[in-house]
Every structure is written in structure tokens, then in C-alpha cells.
Length: 228
Ligand code: ADP
Ligand code: ADP
Image (cartoon, rainbow, N blue to C red):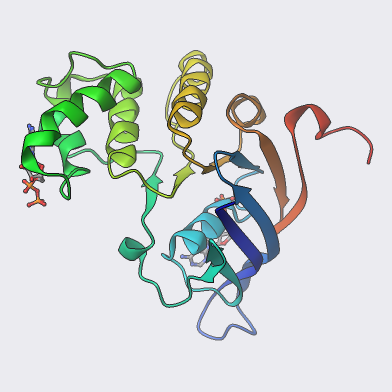
């Protein structure tokens, strides 16, 4: 089975690693094909740093990130074929919805792009939105576009850093459920970082609890707080 493996990863900030902030400390977990893992913990516990390290945006002070058994050390961000999504979807303001999604399809033959854009918009619940300027969209709609754009190149794994945190609570719950449906429908494995337990439980097959740079436990939502 193709798997993302995170092995004893540490991330340390500062000039001298020995004296720096140990933001992530010896974290290990796997994400098998089609599984969604949430990393849950308070602000500052190292979730973002860990996700950035997996993406290749942050150097590892220790440990390794492997895809399908191959160590990704030295493999640059764009060659990892991982999808990324952040709290602010960072849409291209000068392009319409279809143009934003099509950005993720640069490798696809031109003739096939319009059809793929329509499929992706349908998938995220935005059928018919293609020609809307992104400035006219709600926050939730913008994150749906960001999700469609991130999925367009069919990433090996999707890394999501608090993608719903800027939205209203009611909207967040609905979007968390929809997001899970999209990941399951496309079979995209994902790592979803959040400080919100309801969100983590709605999205993930397994939830990892982080505290002070460490992963304390990792279990399905209904087993997470059960005594070991
Ligand atoms: P979370 O995503 O859980 O809020 P972060 O990974 O952002 O946590 O931060 C973990 C720790 O690392 C915090 O103490 C934070 O201040 C520190 N940190 C994060 N980014 C940097 C950075 N670029 N330089 C120095 N310290 C950082
Ligand atoms: P960049 O030069 O930044 O890579 P482009 O402007 O070339 O971005 O756009 C990326 C791809 O998306 C291009 O191949 C372009 O043809 C396609 N594209 C842009 N806007 C649309 C749109 N509205 N509908 C379909 N394809 C689009």
C-alpha cells in the first residue's frame, strides 16, 4: 500500500539547532492510501511546523519523510506532488473561479481542461460558478475553490493547515463534512491540521493529539479519549 510515512521528525528554529526552539520533537505517524489524519492541538504546539516539514517547506532537524518507502530528503516541494491548502486559500484575485481551478491543471492538455474544471467544481459543490470573479465569493466558497484547485493536479496527498479556521462555526461544521466527502470520493489521503476538535472528528479517520511538539496519541475519533 502506498503510504506517507513520518519518522521521528523534529523541527528546530534558530541559528544554532542545539539552542533553538524545538517546535516539533520526535513525531512519527503513517497516512495509508485514502486515509484522512487530523492533527489536533492548541496554538503553538507545532502543528504547522510539522505540516510544513512534511511538505518540504521546513528543513528537518531530525527524522525522515517517506513516500511509498522512498526518503524525500532533498526532494524539493514541487517535486513531491503534495497538495497544499491554507487558512486563506490565496486565490488569484484577477482570475475567475475556472481560472483559479485551471491553474492546477497546467500539465493537462488544453482541450481536456474545461471538462476537468467543470468536474472539480461539481465535486466541491460549485457547479456553475466557473465564470464568477473570486471577489464575489463568500469565505466558504473561496475555500471550496481553493480545494478544487489543490485537487486538480491529483496530488499524492493533501496537506491542509487550518483551512476552515477563518470561517463561522456553523459554516465550518458543514464544510468539514463536505471536505471529508470530497477526500473520500477522490481517495486522496490527507493530513488536516486544526485546533478544533469537532472539525478534526468530522474530517478524519484518525486524530492525532499534539502537545508541545509531540504527538501524544493517534486513534479513530471514537477511541481517542478512551482509556488505553
Ligand atoms: P501551531 O501550528 O500548532 O500553532 P507552530 O508550528 O506554528 O504551531 O509553532 C510551534 C512553535 O514554533 C511555536 O513556539 C512558534 O512560536 C514557533 N515557531 C513557528 N514558526 C517559527 C519560525 N519561523 N521561527 C521561529 N519560531 C517559530
Ligand atoms: P501561469 O502563467 O501563472 O502558469 P497561466 O495564466 O498560464 O498561469 O494559466 C495556467 C493555465 O490555466 C494556463 O494553461 C491557462 O490556459 C489555463 N487557464 C487560465 N484561465 C483559464 C480559464 N478561465 N479556463 C480554462 N483554463 C484557464
